[in-house]
Length: 322
Image (cartoon, rainbow, N blue to C red; front, side, top):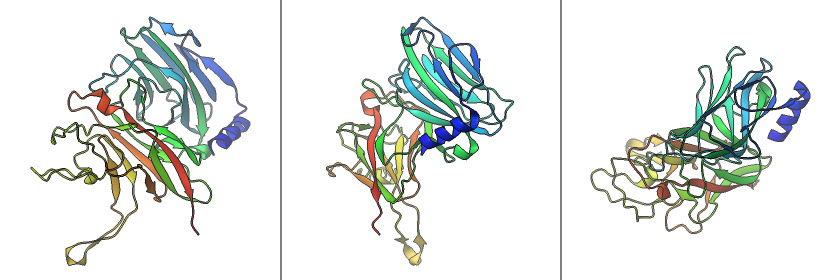
């Protein structure tokens, strides 16, 4: 469990808690990065940077908990963070960029050598007058790291998962490519996902190749008319922006008795996580490890933000039937 990981880290590294703000440096295993006027709003800033350094060569990840995080929204049409953004980078590692409202979210970020500083750079545009942030940054040793490829890791038997900037009057961010992982609990063999509420899944397919009627309720299993090589939605081939939840693989018998196994993926986009006729919406998977893939590319054109809210799902692990 993540909590026990943190307790171990506290004992091992004699934890010190530091609060830091703009243009400061932290060499500490737990750092709270806050806006200069926290807990009040900060106004009139154009940038804010923080430099972090590893406390030990055994540190291989950072865990960032966005306790409070309220920056300007992305471009409403494209989802790109333009005026405001939070950017985390380290050496040659992948860079993380987010904006909008992300209170309650968390991420794990791989860090490399002792020599490379870890930099948080915040660009703050002129359109947003006030911001608020409190980010808890925990240095995680190798033995406690999240599994490879998991930007987010949830450890409870049940919980709520949201894409970044899932908020009233928000829209999902562009250029997001990551996996959400759920740690398998003891004696649990499958997992169920259900939308948080009726309209908690809104992801435009974001493709220039297929013209999709905005009034059509599309889910993972709806069919499109087979014209001009249009592919059925459950194949996912027309979904440029999509959520991927691995499904239960089945052997497919093709011509010549050829067998293809372990090829099954369920790809979701449109206005419903499930096919329109499935009520209530409920997706169950026993594929281990439990993962959800988030794939939001660069917008191919101006799109309605109402059709790009993103995803909020409740998950609950299910006991094994021995």
